[in-house]
Length: 132
Image 1 (cartoon, rainbow, N blue to C red):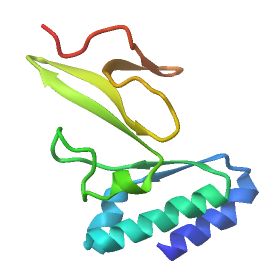
Image 2: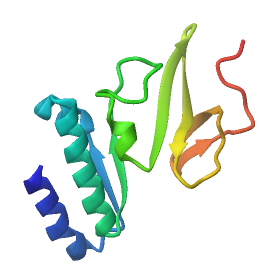
Image 3: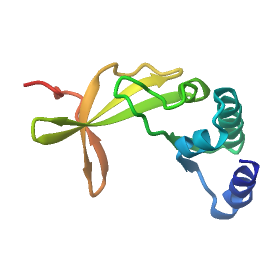
Image 4: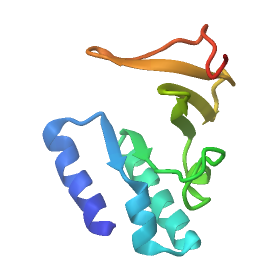
Protein backbone atom coordinates (compact mmCIF):
# COMPACT_ATOMS: atom_id res chain seq x y z
CA UNK A 1 0.00 0.00 0.00
CA UNK A 2 2.95 2.30 0.55
CA UNK A 3 3.67 2.41 -3.18
CA UNK A 4 0.03 3.29 -3.91
CA UNK A 5 0.18 6.16 -1.41
CA UNK A 6 3.51 7.32 -2.89
CA UNK A 7 1.93 7.38 -6.36
CA UNK A 8 -1.03 9.41 -5.09
CA UNK A 9 1.31 11.90 -3.40
CA UNK A 10 3.47 12.20 -6.53
CA UNK A 11 0.62 12.81 -8.95
CA UNK A 12 -1.69 14.89 -6.75
CA UNK A 13 0.09 18.20 -7.38
CA UNK A 14 0.76 17.42 -11.02
CA UNK A 15 -2.92 17.11 -11.89
CA UNK A 16 -4.19 19.51 -9.19
CA UNK A 17 -6.45 16.78 -7.82
CA UNK A 18 -9.23 17.69 -5.41
CA UNK A 19 -10.69 14.20 -5.00
CA UNK A 20 -9.41 10.64 -4.88
CA UNK A 21 -11.30 7.41 -5.47
CA UNK A 22 -9.95 4.15 -4.09
CA UNK A 23 -11.82 1.41 -5.91
CA UNK A 24 -11.68 -1.36 -4.02
CA UNK A 25 -10.91 -1.58 -0.43
CA UNK A 26 -12.19 -5.13 -0.90
CA UNK A 27 -8.98 -5.96 -2.79
CA UNK A 28 -6.90 -4.41 -0.02
CA UNK A 29 -8.79 -6.51 2.52
CA UNK A 30 -8.23 -9.74 0.63
CA UNK A 31 -4.54 -8.90 0.29
CA UNK A 32 -4.04 -8.14 4.00
CA UNK A 33 -6.65 -10.62 5.37
CA UNK A 34 -6.21 -9.70 9.05
CA UNK A 35 -8.93 -7.21 10.15
CA UNK A 36 -6.53 -5.32 12.43
CA UNK A 37 -4.05 -4.86 9.55
CA UNK A 38 -6.87 -3.81 7.23
CA UNK A 39 -8.02 -1.22 9.75
CA UNK A 40 -4.49 0.19 10.24
CA UNK A 41 -3.75 0.41 6.51
CA UNK A 42 -7.10 1.96 5.60
CA UNK A 43 -6.65 4.49 8.39
CA UNK A 44 -3.17 5.36 7.06
CA UNK A 45 -4.60 5.73 3.57
CA UNK A 46 -7.52 7.93 4.63
CA UNK A 47 -5.21 10.07 6.81
CA UNK A 48 -2.77 10.53 3.91
CA UNK A 49 -5.59 11.61 1.60
CA UNK A 50 -6.90 14.03 4.23
CA UNK A 51 -3.43 15.56 4.78
CA UNK A 52 -3.17 16.07 1.01
CA UNK A 53 -6.45 17.99 1.14
CA UNK A 54 -8.25 15.44 -1.00
CA UNK A 55 -11.87 14.52 -0.61
CA UNK A 56 -11.67 10.76 -0.71
CA UNK A 57 -14.09 8.05 -1.70
CA UNK A 58 -13.45 4.37 -1.09
CA UNK A 59 -15.58 1.61 -2.51
CA UNK A 60 -16.25 -1.69 -0.81
CA UNK A 61 -18.29 -4.66 -1.94
CA UNK A 62 -20.61 -6.12 0.65
CA UNK A 63 -21.96 -9.65 0.57
CA UNK A 64 -24.93 -9.16 2.89
CA UNK A 65 -27.50 -6.42 2.31
CA UNK A 66 -27.74 -5.92 6.08
CA UNK A 67 -24.03 -5.08 6.35
CA UNK A 68 -22.15 -1.84 5.69
CA UNK A 69 -18.68 -3.32 5.26
CA UNK A 70 -16.95 -6.43 3.99
CA UNK A 71 -14.33 -6.90 6.70
CA UNK A 72 -16.05 -5.16 9.61
CA UNK A 73 -13.59 -2.27 9.85
CA UNK A 74 -14.20 0.01 6.87
CA UNK A 75 -16.97 2.06 8.49
CA UNK A 76 -14.79 2.82 11.50
CA UNK A 77 -11.94 4.46 9.55
CA UNK A 78 -14.09 6.76 7.42
CA UNK A 79 -15.88 10.03 8.06
CA UNK A 80 -18.92 8.80 6.18
CA UNK A 81 -20.52 5.66 4.85
CA UNK A 82 -22.91 5.73 1.91
CA UNK A 83 -24.56 2.44 0.98
CA UNK A 84 -25.84 1.97 -2.56
CA UNK A 85 -28.34 -0.79 -3.17
CA UNK A 86 -29.46 -2.49 -6.37
CA UNK A 87 -32.27 -4.69 -5.09
CA UNK A 88 -34.42 -6.94 -7.20
CA UNK A 89 -38.14 -6.50 -6.55
CA UNK A 90 -40.23 -8.89 -8.64
CA UNK A 91 -38.77 -8.54 -12.15
CA UNK A 92 -37.26 -5.08 -11.69
CA UNK A 93 -34.03 -3.81 -10.16
CA UNK A 94 -34.46 -0.77 -7.92
CA UNK A 95 -31.49 1.45 -7.16
CA UNK A 96 -31.48 3.19 -3.80
CA UNK A 97 -29.01 4.99 -1.56
CA UNK A 98 -28.63 5.41 2.19
CA UNK A 99 -26.34 7.77 4.07
CA UNK A 100 -25.48 5.35 6.87
CA UNK A 101 -22.99 7.64 8.59
CA UNK A 102 -21.69 11.15 7.98
CA UNK A 103 -19.70 12.60 10.87
CA UNK A 104 -20.53 16.20 11.72
CA UNK A 105 -23.55 16.31 9.45
CA UNK A 106 -27.26 16.03 9.97
CA UNK A 107 -28.56 13.86 7.14
CA UNK A 108 -31.56 11.88 6.08
CA UNK A 109 -31.82 8.54 7.82
CA UNK A 110 -33.97 7.05 5.06
CA UNK A 111 -33.27 4.90 2.04
CA UNK A 112 -34.02 6.83 -1.14
CA UNK A 113 -34.32 5.81 -4.79
CA UNK A 114 -31.84 7.26 -7.25
CA UNK A 115 -31.18 7.23 -10.95
CA UNK A 116 -28.04 7.61 -13.00
CA UNK A 117 -28.45 10.31 -15.65
CA UNK A 118 -26.08 11.75 -18.26
CA UNK A 119 -25.32 14.59 -15.82
CA UNK A 120 -24.82 12.48 -12.70
CA UNK A 121 -26.69 10.75 -9.92
CA UNK A 122 -30.11 12.13 -9.01
CA UNK A 123 -31.51 11.13 -5.60
CA UNK A 124 -35.27 11.31 -5.06
CA UNK A 125 -35.64 11.87 -1.30
CA UNK A 126 -39.42 12.39 -1.43
CA UNK A 127 -40.16 9.04 -3.05
CA UNK A 128 -40.67 5.75 -1.27
CA UNK A 129 -38.60 2.74 -2.07
CA UNK A 130 -39.36 -1.00 -1.85
CA UNK A 131 -43.06 -0.39 -1.33
CA UNK A 132 -45.79 -2.23 -3.16
